[in-house]
Length: 492
RNA sequence: GGGCCGUUAGCUCAGCGGUAGAGCAGUUGACUCUUAAUCAAUUGGUCGAAGGUUCAAUCCCUUCACGGCCCA
Image 1 (cartoon, rainbow, N blue to C red):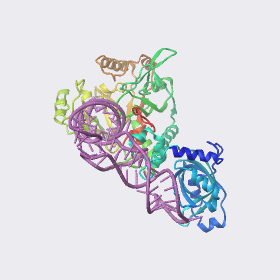
Image 2 (image 1 turned 180 degrees about the horizontal axis):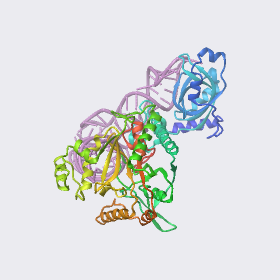
Image 3 (image 1 turned 30 degrees about the vertical axis):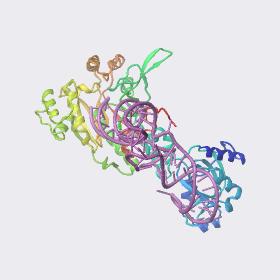
Image 4 (image 1 turned 90 degrees about the vertical axis):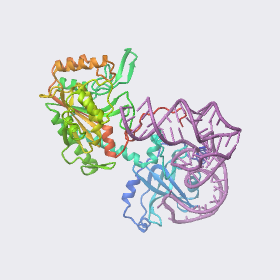
């Protein structure tokens, strides 16, 4: 670090500008590589190319006394550059050789050529140091492998581990493809409050905050659902929001306290309609990004081309978890059967529905590798979903499972204010029994429903988890640029 | 929250009771065709923190911090 400071001082001493901002690259490494891909060495000598200016970071240096090669990395890719006493002049060569370190940002100007080995190379005539890299870089071969350091210093991770950038490029393209798909299907993107008086729309603990001027306690939203539905009441028929939610819960390979979710609502649609549209959208997005509808994830090849499998939660417990009809009869038989399968039972068991879903989550979820819709959820865990027309206690909800993980929820939305009131009451009861995740009673939302919400279907889709699939990453932190970590006492 | 594992040079790692090692990076020298350049020499460490056991601790024990994986 000290040596790097000395080199910077030496550069300034020899007349170099300090952090200049007048460099104007007129090409990228990739453009030049493509433009001259076919040109051989003789042709490049016979007809001098125009002068090109590239900007980028020096990522490798190979010195041969009076000749040096370096690898210049810019946003597009990387290209070899070279300086020599003969070609660049002794002063320019010495300035580079004496003052430039690995990691420095430079602007280099020169003409294209090929080396004796045939490598396309920018033969540098002049250069400027744009920004000094004051810290030594990680191992040039292994890169930065310490997971903690990679998350804490993502900016470093990004330029020393080139695959990392690709992950976030893919994520960005995925999000953009989703937006285009929805825009083309008549949806309107909207923005609803993140600061909410009551954090509703999901069952999770919120983050608390406070507004000073109003002296008002507020929560960061855990879901946009209740506001998006208000827009249906207001007359918008197709809306979506693709944005951040916050849940004050544990951190794992599947959970980050802030995460991105897509929710959309369609008037005059059922669960079936939104499931169908989601299937179409995912097929479209995967094909856009991959060129085909198959996706390699870990050891699995996931096929978005075929119609997604569908089964009720009940069927899945019978066929995939090995329960019998008799096991599923009552809360007691189910508890006994689950215990026999060594399912760790919740304590206390509050309802049949919750135990049922718990069994599904522990025994079935991990088996659902290919895209699968699980249909019909217990009413106890689904306070915002329309009830099943002929099965009391069950709702017209579905969840999408891919690679053993839950990826999204699909509802025929509840728009009957009396039913909704009863569901809120049930949640209020759970809260009074100490359930910190119970959904708060939302009077204003009920008021909106009382004004009439058109029948609708809606979805929530986890964008981070989808990004994990698309980029073949095992942890949610690998698809979030700056995942939350506990601060370190001694941070570099 | 529980279990297991990790934390040693800027990076990647070895060492596991006798007082600290390698490769890369850095520094010095040689070198006009390398692309993990090569060759020679060389600098660099409160061995995550605190306490304990011991003649002696990076190593054994305890607690703590941060992280990873699995489970809840």
